[in-house]
Structure formats: C-alpha cells, structure tokens
Image (cartoon, rainbow, N blue to C red; front, side, top):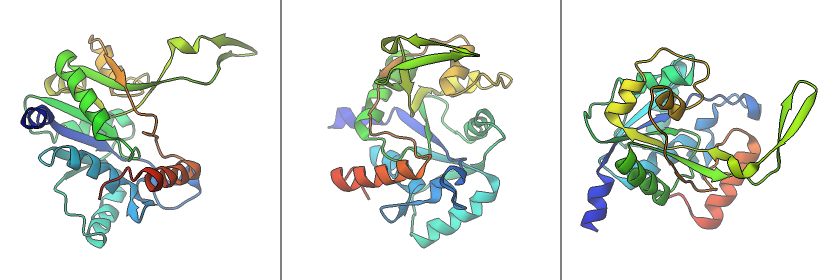
Length: 237
C-alpha cells in the first residue's frame, strides 16, 4: 500500500478545464454546473482526483463569467476541497496555458482533464501515471467500434478502424516537458494537449482508457452518466 501511495504522489498536479456552455443541451446553465446525482458535474470531476491523491494540486480553468457562479456553488454544496482557479482563454490552448502558469511544482507529473468527464476512475488515472512515469507522455484511448468513412467533397472512403483510436483525458505529462511545449505559438491544429506536445517534437505514448469515461456534451450524455453512476455507484462522495 505504501508503495502504491508513493506512486500516486508522482502525480503532483491536475488542470481541469471547464469552459463549456449549455448550448447543445438548450440549457442556460453551463454543462459543467448541471446536476449529476445532486452535485454539479464539475464537483464530481474534482472529487475523482482528490480521492486519487488528497494532496494533489488542483487548478480549475473556467470562463471568467463562471468563476463567481462556481464560488457560489461551492458555498451552496459546502464543497471545501482546496483548489486554485484561473480564467479560460478563447481556445483550449490558452486555457491550459493559463492553468500551467499557476502550477507551482517544478518536477513530477501533471494531468490535464476535461471538467465534463466526471466518470474517470482511479484505475485509469494510475495507468496513465505509470505510463507517463516511464515515457513522460501518456494519453488514454479506446477502440473505435463503428465503421468509419472519410468524406472528401463528393467522395467518401472506408477507413480501417483497427488503425484508429478515440482519445480521452486525462492526458498526463512530465511537468517541465508540457510547460516547455506550451511556450510555442498557438496553432489551430492543436486539438488537445498531446498535439501540442507532439508538435514540440515528443513522442506520444498511449494507454487503455475506460469506456465509461464519457464527455458530457448532450442531455443524452448526462442521462447516461446518471444511469452509470446509479447502477455502478461509480462516483464517491
């Protein structure tokens, strides 16, 4: 147990990016603040990393006009887990960059996670940590099970799904490596943190994610998450 706890302590920080809105759900409430089992989605996400390692440095990145809303929600739900906050940017790249500016640790590993992925589990976080400990980079992926076609203008082509993976978060990196990578100028091709690190010349290593680790973007996703957490008691409070 002591050895496992020492491993967990290698993950020094987590940046949780929560810049979404409620537009896809036709809801005025940002999706990270919608209730899942009587608690805002984002609080579940924070709890997952706190339960993994209570000493982890937690940084939340929120739209500037959501920061006061979050503070009020913390008071309402008596949510007292220690964390830092910063405002998000126009693109995810700038949001993560702002989060990195608050990281105090000079060595170790850092996770970057979507605020609306509240079903991440400790086993997956640990797998990512162990991969990043060995290789400095680690991103969770799951198999593509649907048939895939590439559309180009008026033509479309079948792709080999066995060569494709669906990317999740948390993406975990050596702290100095990711900070250095984010010194580069923004490029619209950066769709996640791995693409930034890859553009800086580093190899990206993959590990197996968990299929329940869905990103909540629609009402169906929220209903499905409610079903999963009720059925399997996946969320610890």
